[in-house]
Length: 564
Image 1 (cartoon, rainbow, N blue to C red):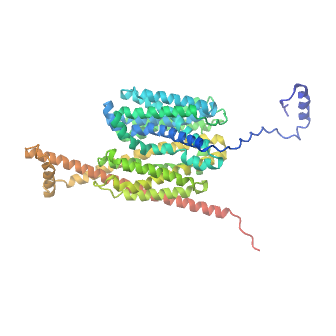
Image 2: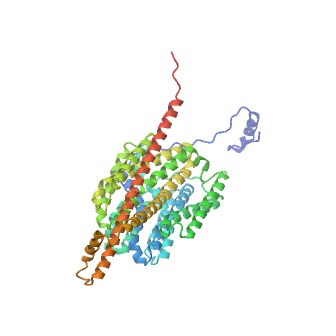
Image 3: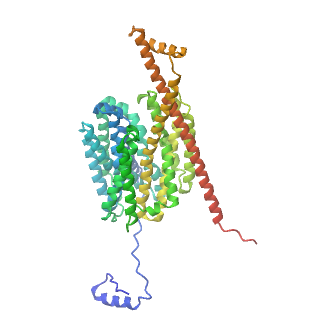
């Protein structure tokens, strides 16, 4: 047995080595020193706990509003930049292309260099980029800034989560902490819609950027004035990351751009979409080959490819796509019906209140073993909401959607935290080194799942709109007395300004075509809601079968009672 060297005084080193050599067969292997136990938790005063909770919400809102304020106002930005709808759609695409990789990169930076430095540098860079956004007067510079903000905004969601955990006792970190650690990001979507009209009215497009700057400066003050506990540092980077991270960034970024822009340029009409998609898939395949041969992989693919984790990831993607019913389906229908942001304020106010109420309710019931049942409840609520929305018409108004969208908001609020708790518990059971692998799965399913849901639903609506438009066009003929009467009625609205009967009839025919197009779009969205309803029922059936099989396996594994 080779000689071991111990940290002792020089005079006894030789004797200690001889003793170990003589008794090598009887002395056990030395154990590494145990980590010191964490200090006992000291409850925070009420005012201090409120500061940490508010800091968490502010950081989450800063990150969420930085994306949603732009996404909710692309039409206004299109007018400012003088760009087409396709061109301005690159703004959110640039953000998504870098955000997911940036989040994983920031996680490793935090582990190696510490929370404080990670927070301070990250927020300073974010503030500088937000200020730079104020001076991006053309679309190209705005795209560069948005892509950089995708990386710079990555620390904010992580910091929001840690600030919420900071003031909570250990027993509440996985209940209140999980639920409320993400509430700022969850509220960003409805609040962006609520605040946008007033911001645009006061400062036009500058109002949106000024809001971002203000929130970024508040977040900067939070980071420097409100301290947070530093987790222990550990070495996270090695030379193999110089290969893995470029492949990860290329793969996720390429797929994010394809899913974001595929509908705008249409999937089979722009060759560069196919090239970019192949590049993304090829990069991820190479990444998998590299990670499988690393001694310390950044992402443990062998664990991720286990049946349990594949089922978990598949469920996250499926439900994330279904939850796009609100952000894509309902909002898209309101746009087709000509509803402006001012008319939707009460609806988004209800969504905000219901999201907060659902989060409070979830904190009282969330437990790892209840995750499947909470997801089952969420799916039932999605099915109910989709069924209610599937009966819309051109006369529908936001008031008819208050109940259905409140139900959908409740379902969205109670789905994500249990899923995160379930996955986080499994990662911690395997070891802290598996957290990054879980984070990869979680971000992939949420970001790419959301983009996939949006791309799939908007494409489906476009195809169904063409179908309904063709059916309606076949029934519109000037030989039909009702069609002729409708054209005259539409043209009669211009009788005071158009004296030529032929011009009035032409205008009436154009208005009839617009009305038919609007009706076709409404029917297409009804088809979408019905498809979501059917898909949700199928997902519920799969979940029930999964629960039944798990119960059967658990019963079979229990030892049978011996007869007396």
